[in-house]
Length: 211
Image 1: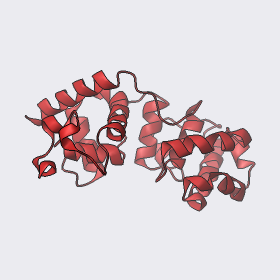
Image 2 (image 1 turned 120 degrees about the vertical axis):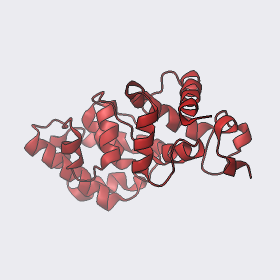
Image 3 (image 1 turned 135 degrees about the vertical axis):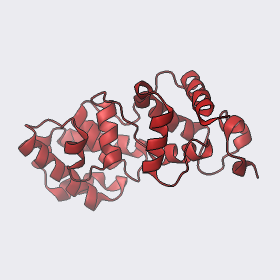
Image 4 (image 1 turned 90 degrees about the vertical axis):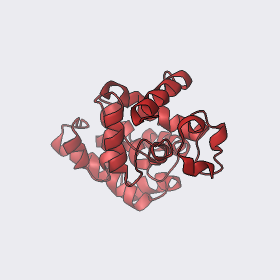
């Protein structure tokens, strides 16, 4: 198959398995989504969804968050890991949102990526899922699967994002990245993966996986 044919097969398979994928991080607005995505770095979505209700019970707006001490935020989010960095980041980005953006999460990549603890992937999630702007956030699942399916070289997440954006129509990106994440968790994990039992890998997977 050509890369284009592989991409078409992937899209067809994922649309049949996950026609309406839900956003895996619980949130109620752009700010709570932003905080949840920051917490998700090197942490499972399940754990984040267990911790955010505790945090948002005390602070679910930038104004309420800056009223907390950084140490208080850290104690709540400890189970998510990297709590010293994440607590400072959440407090800091909340201050900037209040000071520079009238308390509203900014809706441009440039402004989001200027916030503490917000990189390109986090900004992409917020832009796509909170504001509906086409974006293709690449996490470890997507990076791994794009290589397994021969859609990207696997050299970097930046290259993977570029390759996938070229292969798939822009109007599908916001749903497609969620579909790939769900597929990776259910059918195509990093460990214990059997390509012969994977609905996609068995059809278009790289030959190296079958050796």
